Image (cartoon, rainbow, N blue to C red):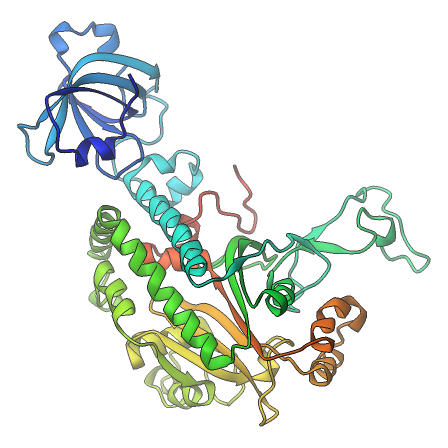
Length: 477
């Protein structure tokens, strides 16, 4: 007899028939009641054991974390909290779990403790919910773009280009650490390396994505990216997933429209599909915030916040207007910001972004037309010669969630920008070819997937929304 998922058993309407369920024991009470979970839902199914007719040696092995197979009759539940339960007729222990050693006991564990046990934290309600939401969001990303006629492109993970120009990249090499071949002037001779040149893990698939957009019209990438940035914060990972659409013939306004529509779609899809998980995560957040001072608590509950993003237009504000707002803001005047805003051209920090979203506008904000000096070389220069057609989307509790721009399609301007930054033109010959042969206005953006999962789940640390986080000094598991 094939086993049925717990989710299907709980959602079914038929009772008084024989069923089989397999999963892991969450709790075992009074030598009689097993709370069984198989990962298909946050909800457990209660399995009632006839302990008088079950050998003691079997009862002793029904411990938290043990894997079991249960056969029995599905009946209407007499107890509160569940509609159905299984009256057990046959119980088989598939895998024992020593209660003295199993770390995921049925009690509240700190998030730090759970990170140290990332291989088992998925057995908890919170992480089961987070990862089901992550999976649903991931599917929604693909569904949105496929419905809109985008083509999915897999850009290289190993690359010779630094798309962001920040230099914070992980080097990929097959050269030996001892006796590394050197050139005459003592530098590493990458010509003897596997690829015959210096290569790194990608920070973005954007440049390669642009080349495909200039033939297929509209494409998106969704894959892992890497930043060797020594940032030990709750918002940074060294390995994370990026969603990057690129669209030929789209200008900056089209780009903003696409990003806003996309975000609203994937959030709505997930809210519709993950009701039980999001209700649990909302309650978890409310419980967590009870210990915080009133001023630090969220103004909205999780589902209310998600509805707010879905139902409201994002406020579009120029960088120049944002600087004026920040300069005259109370925290700036009272020197409460860690980074005081005193002049146009400042690179906005998370505290500034969150002030604009959470205190001033009280809604998601799209900032656009940033100073050219603080943005990447590929962004289109505006007619004023000092700003570029860049846009960032800022979210409550997160700060920047999307960064994008209209790309610089004019070859002469792009060549000048590359020269000014000291980038070797020969390294980007293939990228420049798209401006030589059939160039056109085009735009795109990048969205860090984990930041989106962070927002939708209400979690506060990005290390808790990816299965095995990679951060400075941590590559465990």
